Length: 421
Image (cartoon, rainbow, N blue to C red; front, side, top):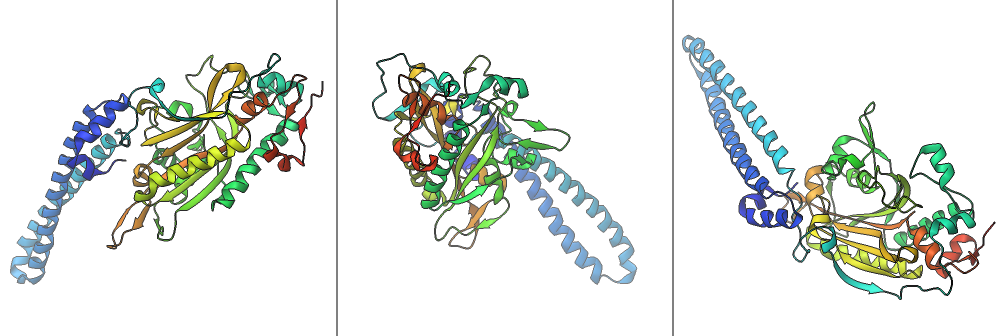
């Protein structure tokens, strides 16, 4: 949720942000009107309540012969207070409903426009070339006995799969490599719930325009998470945090679930776009003034991981229209996938500023002793999709795959993945 003070004092900033996202700017005016109504009804209620308190004192000190009349007046006043309270509550609810439709205001420098309007910040590494016909990651995975899509579909339907043998080992190796690096950087490892309550899912901003991508269990009123970001954001909901020494940093390892609604026909081959996958997600709670520096820190960790795995990539500043409602800025790192002759997203890192914290009631205590919302950030450090880029980048003519040196200790020193058929 956006800052009500910002709404009142700088509505034009919010309108510009909405326009850059390709979203409605008129909702800002609706929110302003709802805020005015809310404040008016609250003031009226508080004035009546103050009058009621004063009248109660008058009744208490009145002579016995006057009390009967005064009690009747007090009852009428109490009815007016109750009605005013109901109006204030309704106005508060209307304001909350409207203001929650305003996305987090983007930060200065975020490119305007839709998905294709991103800005490339930098690239790393030469795109791999081969003197043989390169195989895609699924063909390599089948040769290695690592990926079984056919049986995944038989058991669970399209976009499901089995990782087996070296495929299962490879994913666990990637996760452990990422976890070791996160721990070394001061992150607390977490294995998180993958089912969360609606208020937690909504608090992180995931029940907006992309709600149809989320699996929901109506019998339990629980949502399956598409990232451990959701559970980690909810971990400190309705708490006051001590961030005076340093940020709180968590590394959440979880299975993730996404419907991939609206992606019909996209990446149906292999494990790039699937319904279930594993991921190690970094999540940090920081002082708002430190959020942009923390964002750069998370991206640096991701780049270091990708460089250690020998992957060629680019870092992009995601355009406003391609941001989720909670992100004020997002950097994606896209690795080169040789058989697709294209960069494909492997990581996203978002600065959500105070948007999620306001919705979830996560605060810190300022120097004045008051409380204010913290900033939250999230970023991927490893996920199943990385296997596709690894296999294709490091493949050999005979279908074998060279293991990057940094990953070998996590595979018992294995240097080469060899075909089993």
